[in-house]
Image (cartoon, rainbow, N blue to C red; front, side, top):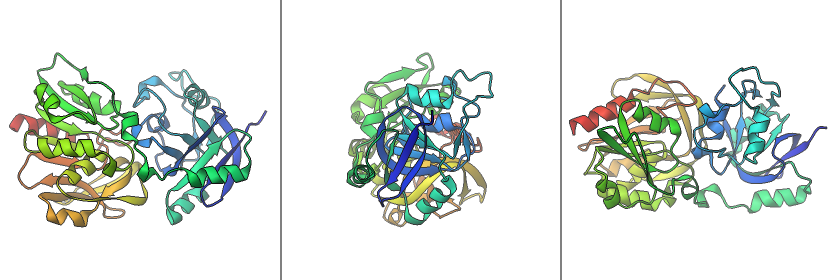
Length: 360
């Protein structure tokens, strides 16, 4: 029996399709991702918290789902929108289907959607507040739910995904790096462990003294969801630690570090989400293809009154993709060098940060 589902936008648009996953109703900001693979990694990426994710690639679920690909302990998105969902897995190593995966974590999905048309709509009008449902709810009520939900800029999402307690990984390693967890992906931690660097993961609101008590050789601010303006605790910690340790920031980490030096950030029209974003290094002229997932960015004009220097830009829209400090051992990037999913063009950045810690 076909299960009807609806996707309702704040402008009154109502899209009907076939439901899969869990039977429920969820609200969130509708965004699109242009990656051709990696749906398991994207669905479990904490930076998608608060979002209803739509894939521009027309077929999802064909290679199933394996826990080896999880980037956190659960699905983080509020819902999943696809053109077509594959119900028969063609991968011996995948123990579950995409439908079973969404059902396990009580997340609704909708298929049969013209995702190309909807992507064009978002590019024109911007990301929108939305509702996805597999329940029998009147259209008028769904439209009101979409309109009345708070804007994602007004929601505190980082506390929902950050670790609640300090965790250590690779305790036997002599060198340790402190990670302030705003929504870390497992592959970020793994990249440090692969280089024999131990990781101490701290809640986003940890005070600077607690971090220094662990005697880390460097500090990283991780990626995460939502509005960086709302993560004031991490910004205040950065102000104190910026000249005490080598610093590395990924995605939201770049935004928070920039704000700690006085720069500003803003909400993008539809953000960068996918595994094919071109980034240019302004010093070398080299162009790399990167994996990205963010809806906010640093205002590059606001960097003029800081000690930060723009080092990399996005070739699609010129937004900041990398920053460095004029004097301090500090480097930030807006994209994801750990990929998962995505190309591995920039994974050497972890080696650069490792060298920065050795040289400090």
